[in-house]
Amino acid sequence: MSSIRAVILDYGNVLCVWPSAKEFEALYRLSGIPPDKFQECFWRYRRDYDRARLDGPAYWRKVARDAAVAFTNGQIEQLIAADVRLWQHRDPTLTRWVEALRATGVKTALLSNMPRDIARSLRQAPSWLEKFDSVVLSSETGFLKPEPEIFRVCLRQLRVKMDEALFIDDRAENVVGAQALGLHALRFESSRQLAGELEPFGLPGLELEAA
Picture 1 (cartoon, rainbow, N blue to C red):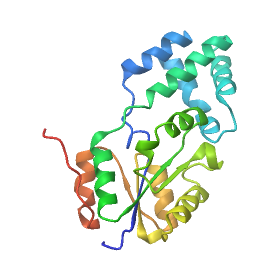
Picture 2 (cartoon, rainbow, N blue to C red; picture 1 turned 90 degrees about the horizontal axis):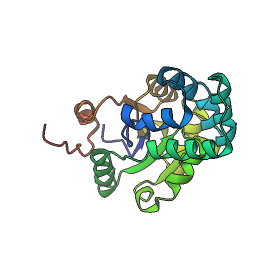
Picture 3 (tube, one colour; picture 1 turned 135 degrees about the horizontal axis):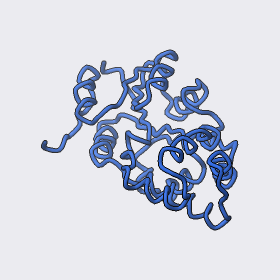
Picture 4 (cartoon, rainbow, N blue to C red; picture 1 turned 90 degrees about the vertical axis):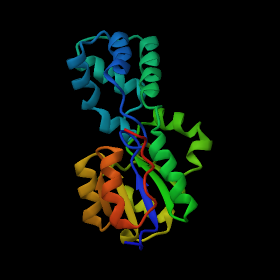
């Protein structure tokens, strides 16, 4: 499939390594909420946070309310900062692949559901973002994957057609949503799995680290 002119990648759990249980412990300690309850409340309002319907303080107050605790303003500031830190470990294998794509003339995009606080932190790493021809973040557009509008924003910025783009995401619903629009799409599970599934697309291969 040499017609692929652009590759669009998700951030969390694709370009960015998923936080470990140990890294989440900092949030548990700051919140005073047991881990299982914390995870339940943490994700409940995440899509509203990703869409910027909630700012950081409003999001964390909802988490606190559902967990039957109360956070001071200082705690909320610390929780926002700790949450941002969770999403800073970028995958070197995927980063090298993005560079290889650009070197062969394939356009690249980062397309992510991401709250404004994390987006602001990401925007402060311009040398890394320069690896992408397009950076589309939900909190900056008001749209969320798998809504068609966010894909269309990205494709307009890339100036490519639906069937000229390959989308890679770890969530099945986002992959299905992209395919329904006419994009090629793969679900990311690991770098090794992705490397095997890329072969039919005629793109530069992933340089995997030795096992």
